[in-house]
Amino acid sequence: MIECAVWWAVPLPDEPEYLTLLDDAERGRYRAYRREIDRQRFLTGRVLAKTVAGDLLGRAAADVTFDAACDDCGKPHGRPRVPGAAFELSISHSGERIGVAVTSGVPVGLDVETTSRRVDDALIGYALNETERATLADLTEPDRVAAFFRFWTGKEALMKATGRGLRIPLRSLTLAGPGDPPQLVASADPALDPARTRLADLDPGEGYRAAVAVLAEQELRVTERWWPAP
Image (tube, rainbow, N blue to C red):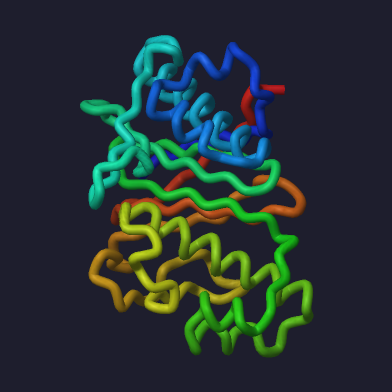
């Protein structure tokens, strides 16, 4: 059994107690965002991830340093990881939701999306293949939108778990349709083997959809909690 813990948070204010947890590279990324909400989401993701990592390592969040070097270009915009640590992290944010997922060394990908985005035929055609589009045909509009975001977040989570992101074409992945348990049914990309992936739907709250994926053969058990705890 693979254990995956997911923490949810809302954007933190730009206050010194949080900003001091960023290292030089993270401060550079933080300042590069033009919109305040984008800065807050980035800040919250790093603070939450360092808090979670610190708890696992038995050290203060301020003493946690991430290596976020991109595997392709070396710039600090890759997945955050603690060198030598026996766990894997994934961060995702959208709207007023920031999430961090952690597993004990198994590659993990987390994705959260607001469901207020307009779901038109162009977006569906971009993200879903013919098999998946067929499952939407007889659905009511609300169910069609819900099904689309389930497909979308599941695919994004799987792609993030590989570390390759959008280099994997969205339509190369076929996910189980509405009414079936979340699952990667088929993949035309060698980075993802259905026999070695596990997928779960999450509950980030009304107006949001989220999924987490791990690259493993064992069954997946997910726990979700809010930070800070109520």
